Image 1 (cartoon, one colour):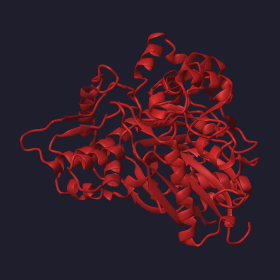
Image 2 (tube, rainbow, N blue to C red):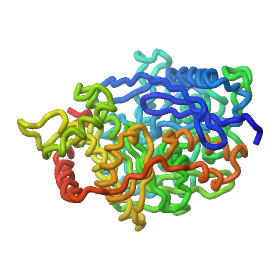
Image 3 (cartoon, rainbow, N blue to C red):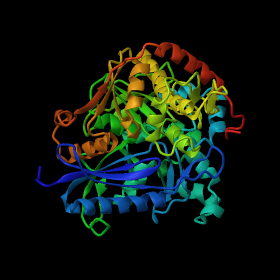
Image 4 (cartoon, rainbow, N blue to C red):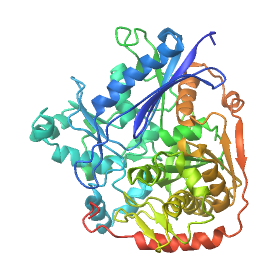
Length: 512
């Protein structure tokens, strides 16, 4: 390893993009962030502008390097982690999107999913992909886009041209990792973890599935090549004539939740982590076995290194957690996220109030795309403090929903849960999580574990780090929270009653 070299990680998330530069000890030495616009063209629809995301990526890489006084030539590699399932289609030659990115939260294809269920195709899809059929995943998004791209909005091509050009291989489909790798290197690739979130990929054979492509009428010619998460052959190099002025290997990519699992050094079967972002995503590593779930969890690819078998995980996807705190802010119940902790602590309980933040349906283990947000148990004495506390409690309760399903599926008791993401800075929430799940909650010193996982994948590929053991030595505990509360089980039962009230509310898939 050359001295004074680093590994950079692009962390492209739902609300913004971050670039972090890590040193050999896994410590961040440069960091820049930029948000992007959220577009809601119709109820239940969520879109991003891929061009804005790319321009922000260029800007933050430049800013992070400049602020830290690091030259691009000092980067040994770049890794990418990304919001998963979010779907981009672009012109292979010009590099311009044909439509805005359809975001993982988007519910416009709920009726298509219900059609698959009526036709009895859900079990077949589950067996091939490990996924519960849902509008969350990429397959129905790209199917919709190929049929409905709006020429008035985009003024890029006529809708009838979109499918013809896709079948001719003139258009590229990918999740956001593919979009960024293409813009950085000109190569059209994805990694196994992101491919496993499309609902078009056989997670057992690690190939695109012809039957699924036929079901969703997605041309194989528009698909990216699937590569390992840490790829010793590299995905490509940055253009030395481009914005960095250097040829840097782009050698690692992981979907954001798999990246957090990797960054938390959950390398052994049974290791588990929960990431608190816009949503929360709890993953338990199951080794080289793809464990099928009987309890509404997803089976997903955890990571793969060059020349090695894929590793798998069970995942519980919770669509709204951090976004529930943003909702409190939108509703002017709090001025900023940090205020939620103080307000929650100012009352002894929620006074019987439960918030079910099913704003975009419910994910694991319920999988109800028509569930909607609900507040129950309010009285004339209910104050904003009770609603704020109940919203924080909903994050912990949803995690217990997933934890119980995970133990049932894997047969492995959960003795501790490693946590990361913005919300874990909230000590009240971490203690609440320990109480409600009934297990130790362990917070690491470096909480940007999603970016760290992408850096680790790329760094391993280029030899910046030599082994998983070396990465484990970089991991250190910031604080451990142990269970203290005694009435959590009773409150959890009432939570389950509240969830029942939220189910199957929307009648048209749009939340109306």
